[in-house]
Structures are given as structure tokens and as C-alpha cells.
Image 1 (cartoon, rainbow, N blue to C red):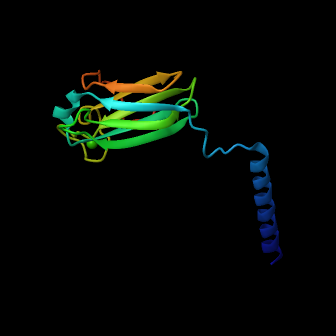
Image 2: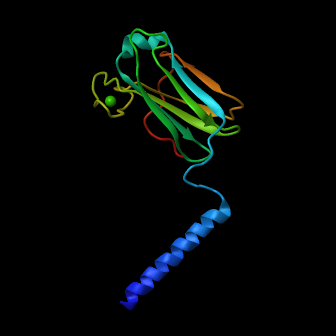
Image 3: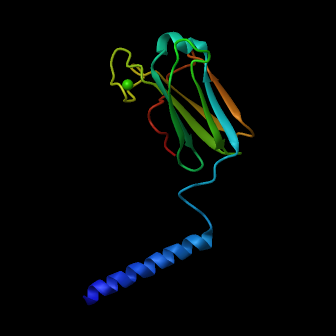
Length: 156
Ligand SMILES: [Ca+2]
């Protein structure tokens, strides 16, 4: 009984201390401030023929904050122009750096639906954004070199 009371008292003291620490710093580590700038990702019509109806996932990793900052998945249109358009409002911060990874669940000749497979099965790209000073529009062509890994999170 005494042990239980001591543990309860200790836990209460820790909770009060942690709460006080959070108030003192004024920093919410779980929700870093978003950047003020918009990132848009748009595909050229040359995506329609090979990938219409397939899903594209775009992941944005913040080099400065060391985590996945945003991710969206969209179905590529076989008829609309543009075949895909993604908007990430208030994502990019001035002077920061980002890895933007793309992969299409194409399963061309192998692979598993819903899983990011190696590039010979799932078409993929990555692009590095450094030091944005305003909103960035990525207009992506299917013919861009695709030898980079769009599946594996970068080492941050
Ligand atoms: Ca796949």
C-alpha cells in the first residue's frame, strides 16, 4: 500500500513537472511550425498513356526537421489534363531543404499492388528542393530520369 502511494505520488509529481516544462518552453515538439509556402506537383500529359488509372504517391521529407512533412496519394487520370495535380499548402519553409519522392504503383512485370516495389516494377523519381524563397510548382514529365529511389525515406 505504501509502495503504491509512493508510485502514485511520484507519477503525479512527474506529470506536473512535465506539464510545467511544456509551458515554460512554449515549444510544441509534436507540431513544428509549417512553412508559409505552397508546393504543387503536376504531371504532364505523357503520364496518361502508361499510368492512367494507377496510383501515385508523393512524399515530402524535411531535411531540416528530419521527418515526413507531407504525403498524398492520387489516381492518375487517363484522360484529364493534367493527369494529376497535388497541392501542399503552407508546407515549405524559407531556407529549408526537402526530398520529394514519387512512386507509381504500376506493378509493371511484377511487384505487389499497394506496395512500393523496386524501380523495375514501380516507376519512381525523387527531386531535392533546397532553400525555397516562395511557392514552388513542380511540373513533372514522365520522361524525367527515373533511376532514383522514390520508395525509401532518405537518411535525415
Ligand atoms: Ca507495387
